[in-house]
Image (cartoon, rainbow, N blue to C red; front, side, top):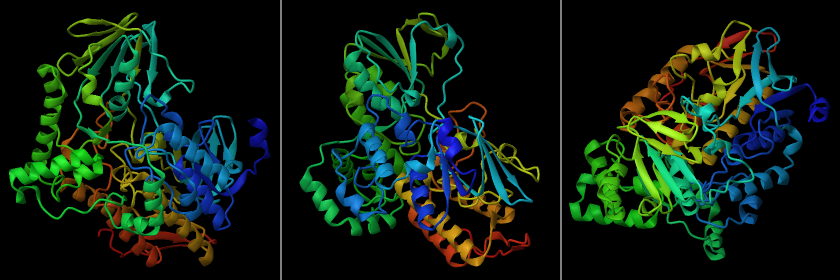
Amino acid sequence: MPDQAQAIARHVDAIVVGAGFAGLYAIHRLRQVGMSVQAIEAGDGVGGTWYWNRYPGARCDVESLEYSFSFSEDLQQDWEWPERFSAQPDILRYANHVADRFDLRRSIQFGTRVTSARFDEGANRWTVETSRGDRYTASFCIMATGNLSLPRVPDFKGLDSFKGRWFHSALWPHEGVDFAGRRVGVIGTGSSGIQMIPLIAEQASELTVFQRTANFSVPAVNRPLTPEAAGRHKANYAQRRAEARRTPFGIAGHAPPTKRAQEDSDEARMRTYEEKWGTGGNISFLYAYTDLLISAEANETASEFVRRKIRATVRDPKTAELLCPDDHPIGTKRLCLDNGYYETFNRDNVSLVDVRSAPIVELTPTGLRTTEREFELDDIVFATGFDAMTGAILDINITTSAGHSLAEKWRDGPRSYLGLAIADFPNLFLITGPGSPSVKTNMVAAIEQHVDWVVDCLAHLRREGIDRIEAVDETEQRWVAHVNEVGDSTLYPRANSWYVGANIPGKPRVFMPYVAGLDKYRDICDRIAGEGYQTFKLGTPKGATTEREGARVSG
């Protein structure tokens, strides 16, 4: 690795942090406009979240033919997805294919973490330092660090004393884990827990699931993707992609709802939910009615439908009730997809422990102890998620020579303009950052939209002889207020979710995604670009700056 680093030019036009889907596409697009680029990636391979998350059952909750790049028609037509909802190994295989097909690896330094990034106001450039002691300078810095890329391992008392094996869903051994004949405890029942629990249950002699908060999950109804089905989709890819761009979630194939939930009779509403349940997919279910995420009354009809399904599936009434969410409206936390999750609790070797009523006190050499009893375990799996949306960015010490620190600026919660740029931090861009649709959309669609906007912006600056762009504080404040206003008009803030940082002790409670929809957000970004980026502060090579404000920041 050191030889590779020494062979790379120390100054480039743009540094990209991360080589997941966002980083890969950023490299490709920057090269297209003639910019030199250096990407830095902590992992030893490409793929981002799909490189790290190798736990049993890891799978995408967006259909494969939608969760894929649209920028290359040849790539779209050539690649064959094996399943409706692809598993992690197949998505990682796709990421590697993209990296090889477009010769992206030569611009990536692997096995290296960025430790600091500092903007020099006088030189008008970023200096990036890494865990290996390398130093790079660039005119622009692009954070493609991902929304779910900094794992959270709970700080349980006694963790170091546990003599068995422990694993985190996002730090899974590449060689896999054999749980055969083992007494396993899984802590956490979010998306990763819901995906892995059925598979671990098939191996373990005993599986104990420690649940603090029950989460809603709907069936994936996954199936092999036949050549005929894929062919029909590919024959209409252009129309499908155009349709996806006009939807809030960036996903085609789901007819927009036309009714509010209460406009249907009870019988008609149940038929609709049954149809959605049988079709599979979380987008399909949440797209049943227009008001499921804005009306508590409407949402309760969908929430109770799922609770009834849980009670009908899980034979033990007490376990069934524990699995029924009662503290948040459906969809306000990530609505999970599963393959036999609730059925798993009918197995004789599986038990559910409510750690909301009896919290975990400590890990012991032989297992763990709650306030009620001790559990002997051979293995513990932490399905405890991530410091989402801001964690990976704030893990880097981002500062400027003018004395600005991003950690200090975001001390009370993230602030950005469009989720793309940050006032006081010139020439720094975020890909799917807080304040953008990001995790509330098809991430690949959101990534393409963001990268295209950033690269088009940089190309515009070059044509105009401008070397500096910065968000304006007042405009940023208006955007943050708009994001909050949109969020507060929905049910989302009612949940203690990772959307508000509730899974991280001490993290400021701020609802981070922009939930007006990727379609509306795209229109806002396009308008700002079309008006010449007038809501930004633009600088000339001589250092003179001009603030050009006035464009609206809301839809």
